[in-house]
Length: 579
Image 1 (cartoon, rainbow, N blue to C red):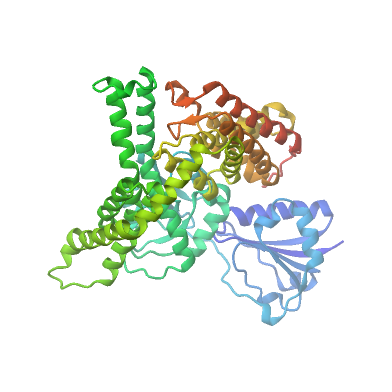
Image 2: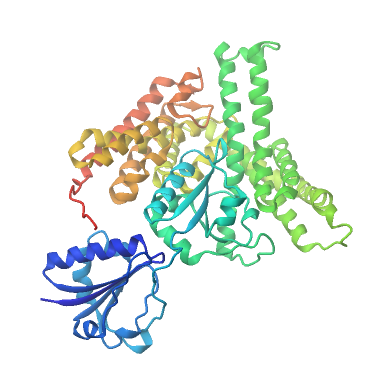
């Protein structure tokens, strides 16, 4: 019989440390070993390992998400691992840990102050979640953070900055009382109100898929936020920032695109060419949707990219650069270029140009907009606009004249991208590509993208219906919700399944998405509104041809659903109960 000593610890000293101790205690019993467990907790007395226990132990096993003081274990066989590695199969992990334990030398020692009982162990957390579309990730990440924080015994309030605006807004008192601020956002959000607070940034995807890990990291890695003068960003941070800037522009452009597309579709109710007759309601709807809304697409994209980079002083140069990109025929690629040129030029002027104190107030409202607009305009007209316009013209011509083989191949690629990371960067890249082409009256790729984007969530719902015995009750309920989300073109409905079983779910989704995307392009489907899922069908002519488009979606859903139903292993219905 083995005699071991175990130490568990997590940053908060609440949930993870206690759960790991309970799982390992059950594993020790199952192995018929003897163990003494030191659970470093902030809410219950810590029974520390005595020197006698340490001396007689065959091995010291440490599982923690924080630093543990190992000074007392010098000369003993020690194995250190993380709680996330331990919890899936505690018994197998423990056996491996004992076999892999090696003698701890003085050079390998770590030091830390053990957690003790405190009167204020319950922490106040405030958070913000935001994603480019402001639909799925925003609210699912908020729900995940709320659930995990409450499970760990903390108080949390989450502000969601979705497509309908900021909800559950944080008050000044909420922020003042907060011990920690978590920003789970894929777009830039204003942070000035958190000046002087401990703040941790992550993405909505990580907050949703690795909630426990991110909250634990937030307690350890959060730093004091300074609202201005923070110049410590690294090159990798800037690369992440560029993606956020782009997504900020896309998120503000989307409502304009959706409204414009649906208005154009409404004009077709009176006949495909009815809008050509001046003075009719069809012509008026086309003027509103195509003449006004679609004309604003590129300026809004560029303007809010620049706004994300340089705040309000960057907005005017971005809008002007975007309007020039549109008039020069540079399309959405030109708009992206104009946004970054305007934003970074405005930021450079703000950071580098010093003026007398008496003129400093003129800087954001006069100097920066004027100089940045002049610079952006000259660059767009004389350097960037022409070449990008030629690229857009060639791309549009290729897409509108490509043969069926190339069309199918493009649909397959776009379908795979939409299903690869379920709302992540690859998914958003494909979506942005399709939305951008709407300004060039190229509607086929957008149809393939939305159809393929519905497949993962629909397919997971179908799989839980086909093989109910392979899924737990909670998974079957998640499957029903996933199917409804799929109908709304919310790929994120499949995330709970992908997070739990990625090696089977993601390939199954990509196979179905590739088929749907390819069939949509083969059938010549076109979509005028870049969101809404099958509910867009209520708008006549928003999707054409309707029947074949539904066939493409059904085929991909069947492939994903049947494939995952076949690959899925039956869930283990026995769950370890932790006292």
